[in-house]
Length: 317
Ligand SMILES: Cc1cc2nc3c(=O)[nH]c(=O)nc-3n(C[C@H](O)[C@H](O)[C@H](O)COP(=O)(O)OP(=O)(O)OC[C@H]3O[C@@H](n4cnc5c(N)ncnc54)[C@H](O)[C@@H]3O)c2cc1C
Image 1 (tube, rainbow, N blue to C red):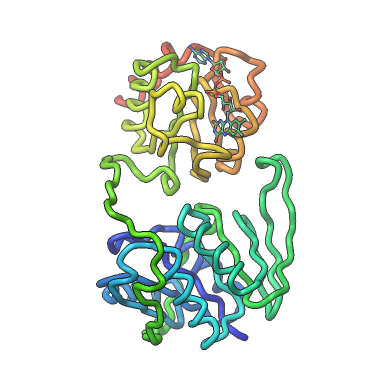
Image 2 (image 1 turned 60 degrees about the vertical axis):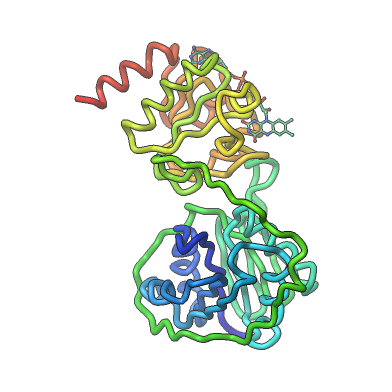
């Protein structure tokens, strides 16, 4: 068994940055690195993976792969693993990546490390660091079955250019419509000019302290001046001030930006689970005892309705 495979996370030909992060990191393990892409009309994407170090690109085209669906993707990947025998397969720790990797692990009876933030992979052994207890502690887990499977958190590994051959390989397509047991009837993406929450370099989030849509508007203004994504605590989401897709935390999205600005968010453990690995954390909160200040690099004890407008004015200068 040889080679580290990286499953390409893409939708409609838009490749998520975490794919390049995984390819760049995989180079460190000294083994052959292969990108694996499933989709329809995606062959043109193949050359871009070579730039970051893909020695080979497995391209699997077909109608059945037009949208992510568990049955067909698992059947196809399992057949390819059987044929090519990679040492490890990495997936993005996204909703689809989590679904895919866990179902594949079950089918192959293989070990899976999830939400990985550091990895060491050698022949037959993968040692991974992952956050546990909502980010309060870190566990090192060893996967000893083959292939080694892992889902990787976005934003933890650096993207590095490292040109490689990128030889395109077209494996036999074995998945058919018979493997599809749920159809996506309609897909409506949220249209936003802001960066995608899990990939943004800066995230500005609002919590219950925003007190309503007016406070959230201030958060959005600050985000737009910084070219940032908007996020929210569950309290803000449950109050209906932001859609569910904005929730950061244990039951929402995990973000890992360079800068996370928490506005009117107390810092409950379930919220920290989604943002505590941000490189720099800033908090605006009226309560100096708020737990968010325990993880903040920089904090403003103050009323967000006063602090954010001043910040916005400064940023406009
Ligand atoms: C199983 C489970 C899963 C959960 N998953 C998540 C999750 O994924 N994400 C998540 O966020 N939560 C999650 N929660 C909820 C979590 O426990 C907290 O209830 C939630 O994060 C609190 O949101 P908040 O910080 O906005 O509100 P609060 O805790 O009410 O904090 C509001 C903060 O705003 C400050 N404030 C008030 N007025 C102002 C002002 N004018 N200016 C500045 N600051 C002000 C206050 O001092 C306070 O610190 C989960 C809970 C459970 C049980």
